[in-house]
Image (cartoon, rainbow, N blue to C red; front, side, top):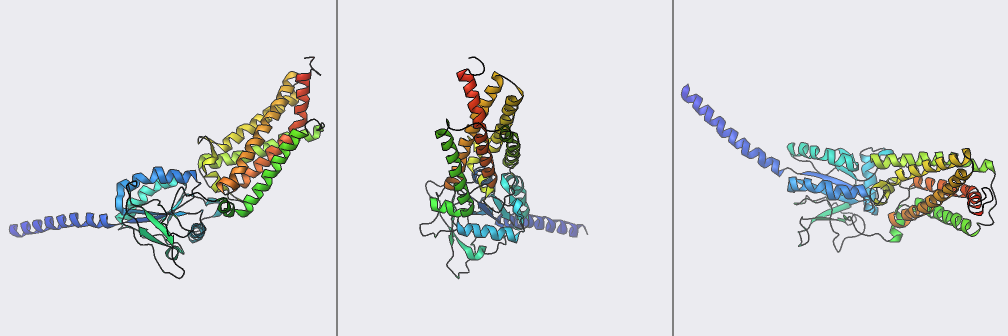
Length: 390
């Protein structure tokens, strides 16, 4: 019996050693595969690609494969729409960056770095996970492995459109990649890149209806500013009733700016209407002033300041009232000029239009028009001494 016990113990040790050597080998052979939808103009996407994913590639090496799909391209946008329908993502939650691994969808630059590492560990422990079940993925592109160059520290992969009728499937790449440079023969469509410049026609075509509306609003704002400047002396006084529209419009603008500030600071998807692509705009690098201050927060501060100036002008008398009216004119003029700049960026630089932003721009332009009459009175009183004997 003692001899048999030693034999059993020895066999158990050998089996443990075999399992210890086999299981890690199997785990190392497991691969977690995911698809990342992004836009070249999306600041949050840039953060995910350049800051959040590289440490994961360093840690998992060839066990992690991520294919990037540029939603700015027609083929990429088609795949994105197919993915949102396949995984039943409601419109108010749609946006980029969006990463799909297995049957899990992660949206935004907060959820991806927070949840992706745990999902990678989970799927690798289960033996890996295949490419997400996105309709059209297998037919849309082929994956070609590329070798590292002298200027590339990590092998990359290129996505090109499959030939019509092709049943090509994404071949498992042997090196991790978050994005890649397009092959010389790559057709327009699914090109994985973060810095490929788009032509003006391509930008306008990304959101034709929204961009057309932005151009119309832009022309209207420029006309109001130009007409105000050239017809300054001929502009007559406005009624007190008309001027009392200023607080109502300011409160409305404050609500719009407050919602945009919430979207930008909380990094959530905005509720967009039937016109425009506000999430692309809010996720662009232009959504923050100097890369730090959210434009929505700047709008909130501006509308609050306008309300304060209007209140002082209404409820104070003398010089303070005139200074407040002059400040009101200056702030609305600055706000309109800045709105012209932001509205110009939407169709001509970003290639997408935010209906919320257009609404705020039109409100600010209306406030400028309403502030002209009290501003002229204030200038007359302060600099010509008609009221204060200056």
